[in-house]
Image 1 (cartoon, one colour):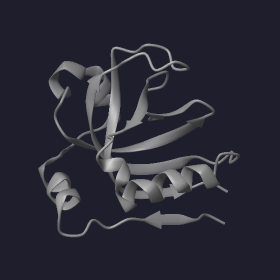
Image 2: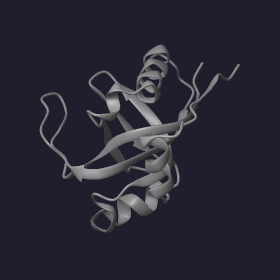
Image 3: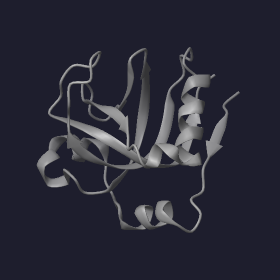
Image 4: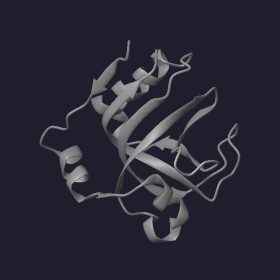
Length: 133
């Protein structure tokens, strides 16, 4: 049975962010990182859950992924807290988790357990997440 969590942005910062973000494919984003760095984009991606962090990818461009980090201001919103709770509830799943997310490519930083990357995807909002179990 597939469970689906849909998060609708109410009038406010999440709705404004979603309206100003360009919808691009994940493959387009990773093949042209300088073009999209710092610019809000909306992606439909596969979320990969690991012990020390999460990443996003797309089967259309294998062997490409980006580390997923939460924007600290957005992390306090219900939308992101629901997203991370959904991921926590599905840590042991073998089925893919798909999400429609909005955020920006930003400079990667060494954060202990995660390898240093040139760019990471800073998550600002989630409009849909599905899969697991």
